[in-house]
Length: 290
Image: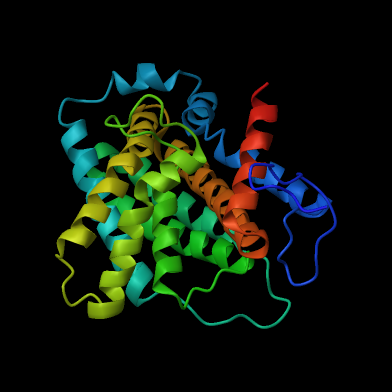
């Protein structure tokens, strides 16, 4: 029996060969559930608090007055660097058949090392440490994207990797009703699409084009929320280099989790269609929220 347009597809069922099913298989549904758990519970601040033993809100109050200026500058510099890396030096080679798993632990170790430097030198090192940490995280995000079947030869996909850095933190300018993965994703989708079109036509010859500047600003605004929490944790004097390494590991793991969830959703959308996955995602999100 054919379903009417107003009837939502079931959450699970037989997967039609060719990936054009209106339903998700039990395996796909379980992967989507895991993605929902990652994307709807971006608890970086809570995880940082467990590391330092103090609520992040309290730590933020200890930051010096100039911290916001330093963090904003460092976040924009980091996102600008990530954008250039994503479109110029990112490894887009297709991996050999069967090599699918991402190297999450290697990237965690690398960012722990940069965090140790940041922890040793405090806030003054942030403008140097953050772009380096962000670049390593971006390569980890791209590795995860590829492990989920994303085509990194597509500039739009590489911009999606940069966009992951905007996940898990609401901008102060967001409407109070705009919550959740899909709301945040849709708020930036047009900007990512326009930036991809610009790059396809001009490359980075016009790096200062408004569409790219606007994308960097929008991502950096959201990214700076987690950067503030990271900086506040690293500001605690007793942590030092070891604490900085730990905080950076948590920081990287957070964005690896966001990337995994995001690219699981995108892979399932390629298989089943965006609307089918969206309906299943929202239904699962509602169930998990109860």
